[in-house]
Structure formats: structure tokens, C-alpha cells
Image (cartoon, rainbow, N blue to C red):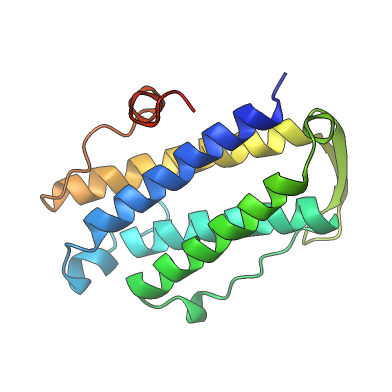
Length: 167
């Protein structure tokens, strides 16, 4: 179903888009980068932070069985810290994928969320959720970047696959 190679490919796409958007965000003034558009999760900075927190929280849940948010927004006040956080998170996910087997990805995991509720999910579903969640917010970031004259261009999976040789 959702084998290890497929998971690694869509996560490579996730990281590629994140890096592309971070590069374009670097062209903005601090005021534009932190401006709240009046809807959604907030500024470009807030959106990046939300994706970073979600990626980290679910990775830790898959590694430990306990979901919590390990990231304090105070530790990520600027784009430089967000970039550092994503670089660390990508490395952590690469390590995770190096150790996981396809049979684990196709299996179910029992987790406890930050409220203490216990639940069970197919692992592939969590991985797919993270990519789709990231894509939703990547799209929002791309729209905001475009409104400031910094369109990242096409961020569709098919363009990533063409650039990367199909992974």
C-alpha cells in the first residue's frame, strides 16, 4: 500500500517545498514575513512554525508512542531559527526512515496524544496526513508569498518528480 520508498519520496517532496518556500520568504521584509493576513494560522512565520511543530510532534509520537509538541514558539522568533528547525527536523525524519521497515509503515501504531487520549492509526495514514497537512499550509504560504511579489511558482508533486527523476 504505502511502502517505505513511497513515504520517503513524498517526504522528500515535502522538504523540497519547504526549502523552496523558505528561500522565497528570505526575500521578504521582516514586516511582511510576520504580517498576519487576518485569517488562518496567521503570518508566513506562523504557518512555517505550525508545520514544523506538527512534523516534530508526529515524528516523536511515532518514535515514542507519545504525541506532544516539543517546540516552543519562543525558540523560533525569526526565519533563521525556522530554517534551523526544519533542517533539524528533516535530519530526524531521515533517521526515522532509515530505521523503519515497509511492514511497519503498513502496520498500525498505538499512540497517546498530548491530552492523554489513546488511539490507534495505520502508520501510513499518519505519514500521508503529514504530507497533505504540509501541502495545505505550503499552498497558503505560497499564496501569501505571491501577494508580496515572491511567487514560488509550481509546487505540485509532478514537477518535483520531473526534477528529481521520479525518485
